[in-house]
Image (cartoon, rainbow, N blue to C red; front, side):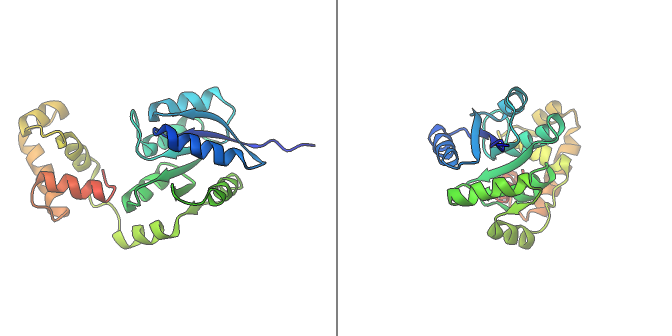
Length: 205
């Protein structure tokens, strides 16, 4: 009896990178790229429309991040295995990916053979994590920000005033000030802009 190939959904917003990955994976005799999307919010519809069993998701995508898409997939297609690919070796991304249900976390510049091997391993029930990223995540520790502090920092990225943030998030201005102050303190930042920068660099937003 012929074994069915591993069926891949590839989500990557840069077309050249996506096409290169698809071509390289297509050279593997037991792997077939069935679907490709360029946005995070297209991941779940594509997974439902195609008979795939592994999703390769980039972290940075319009519409929805790879981590958010992974969490949505875990609910919508719970049997689907998820591999997160990233250009950014940020420790917070690794924690977020694992919490979202990813089985593997790899950097994009890994050799194609290594990516193909990771796909086979996650389908067999194993977990695959880039060792350098794993060591960095352990050294960095857990995200010190609460969900609310992250929400307020994300909302503040566009330069909104406290009054605008309060109206948008349905909180008082005093509460907004408190969340921003706590985030700045926890991140040892100089101000809110610096706190946003630090949190982004560590993958905590």
